[in-house]
Amino acid sequence: MIPNTDPGTAEPLSVRPATIDRFDDIEPVINAHCWCQWWRQTAGEYSRSSPESQRAALREQCAAEPVPGVVAYLGDLPVGWCGFGPRDSMRRLERSRTIPRVDDQPVWSIVCFNVRPGYRRRGVAKALLAGAIEYARAHGAVGLESYPTDPLGTSRDATFSYTGFTSMFEAAGFRRVVETASHADRLPRWLMRLDLAREPAR
Image 1 (tube, rainbow, N blue to C red):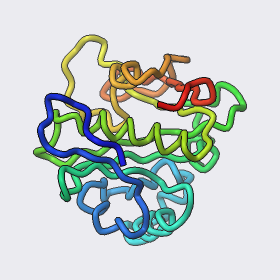
Image 2 (image 1 turned 180 degrees about the vertical axis):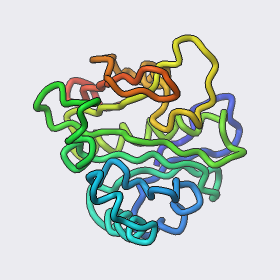
Image 3 (image 1 turned 120 degrees about the vertical axis):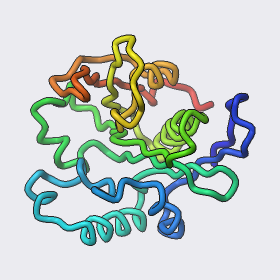
């Protein structure tokens, strides 16, 4: 559990692994259009799937190790989701021509954030990222990749970039590796990396 460390947020904010016993808490905060399966399935698998089968797939993933994400809570209320996992388990990502691998390191990928409406701009995404880093480090990941949007100095609503913004990842110690051929809202998306094997446990 990651305690809230944002002085601007008075509520007791915590982040917990998305284990099967918390599945009922995941449903209110996840994008139910894809159930965090967009990157985990190939394009063909995803196009043939239904919301029911995607939900079942996520439920199965929550019953396994490593879990597919973390959930943020304000008190006992679930308010946010961050999806991640070993990159080689992200079948669409592994086949992507716009976000190719940069090396053969067995990194994990952070693929999405979703914050419940009414709870944005309270440090929820920042806490989710901290929770994802801690979970990945505890489970032996050598590094974490992310694919955030660079807003290029413009003001953009976070709903336009479910993968997050570059500034949040830079603040957490991620470095820019390469600008990808992928875009979000006509803005460039970067492949960023945090090398956990070189980072001391905090």
